[in-house]
Length: 351
Ligand code: 1HN
Image (cartoon, rainbow, N blue to C red; front, side, top):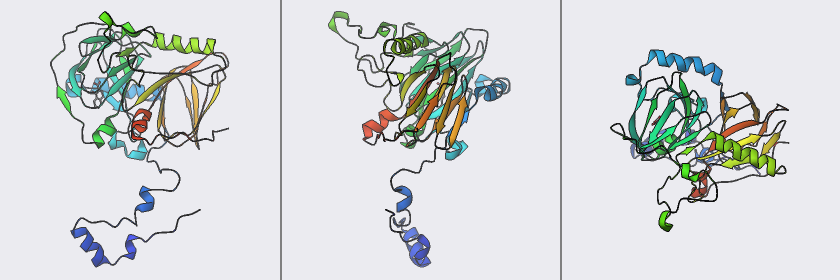
């Protein structure tokens, strides 16, 4: 059923409109349908893909053009044109950036209110120190730098290191709660950030006390996540999606409070139909390839490619290889939407 058409701004006499403006007043009815569209939101977020091999030369060029002292964080932001590139948003809540650190470089310590994670894309020998814990960066690792924790990046290797930053910056900025505190280089106190949680089902409990830390696990090594996915695929061949969530191992809750992260294995030749959900989604290929189809958009993603799909859209993922599995990192804002009570899964998948 279509809704009745409402009065337009132009229908009102100009002197009345001027009187409203003079008192900072606005009539609701000309804008009501725009803010409350029937049935489904009208997203600004556009399905958009970023090809790694195409952006890589530009990122390396940034390494020549801009020294670290002039960048602090040398990043090319993956910006969604639907939001306007200057807004630096991949979706309404998600910020994505490709960061480059060259051998010997140092990105100084700071801490801020937005939460960040890093997914390592290429290179060896870099590390992030998070609240004194030295987290090695290896391809496919996920490293958390949650709200309020000191972090800095160093690089002892001899090749460029690149990683994908995923932050809830647009959300925290929108809340007018985004700010940074500069710090001094941290003293490294350990390098076991979360190694104590490497075996599922058990957690450290010295003298019967469990950790009270908000973020007990800071580094999720790809070797372990990959093994978990392969084990799932082998032992539960009937499972609909070979998928694991990055969680806080003390509480079982999502690893962070605003954005959610998971890893997916697409078995050789697999087609996965995902129902429309209220969250926009980010896909980043860790290994292999995946085609992503959502409404009229179709992206053939190769290794290290990234795309963003707006919410309320059914998504089909295909691994075209009949011999090799592919592995995909995913991010969404489901933790936030669930806390706010607006999270939805809709029936009806792409078929
Ligand atoms: C940040 O702290 C990093 O620490 C990267 O590497 C990108 C984008 C916006 C705000 C803070 C980092 C960021 C950022």
